[in-house]
Length: 265
Picture 1 (cartoon, rainbow, N blue to C red):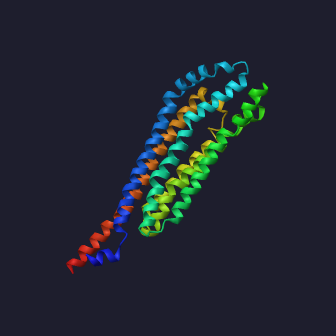
Picture 2: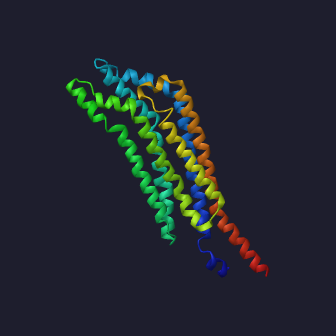
Picture 3: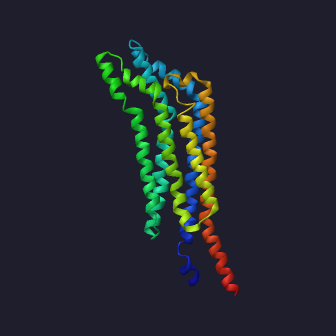
């Protein structure tokens, strides 16, 4: 038994790591599945309620339209950013901190999580920074031309590019942590799947989804495409984290097998 612990002191540590990663993957999957359902089923209901709330701004129709669009993207898109950041902090980062306490190096993975958080903050800034121009226009009773043009032509591309990059950094952080320990081919597959998933989001954000936010509610093609992409992303994330969890727990499994064979000798 002493030989077992001395040979692989981190086997039990990574077994716990695998369990935590599966929880993180399940939560992220749930976020993306709920996002798909919300956009596909409830987006019109949300917009109808929003329209009645900002109706007092109809004296300046473009400002009213801009605020409606911002509220829409806040309700529909920002939960992805907020929930992913929250899960990465409460589950992933805490898990890496526990590894550090047990003298297992996780600096690279923590750096990736930090970079992901910065990218997600940038996505939030891309969404809400133009509000200052809109509020200024409301006070001066003018039209915020720059902000409206931004939301019509640039926002969707910028937002989903940032979301794709942030999500990729989040997904590969546990892969980087574990690959140096196991060299598992399934982790290579998970990394490739994460790259393809996030590349697809960036591609769609710069292609089919790159439309004015004021037309999102009117586009059934967008809602169908977005819901399908989010549901697919959720399934891919579950596969990625299941592979991570299985690879992490295999360390203890193979060490126990090694110890049993040594006893047999």
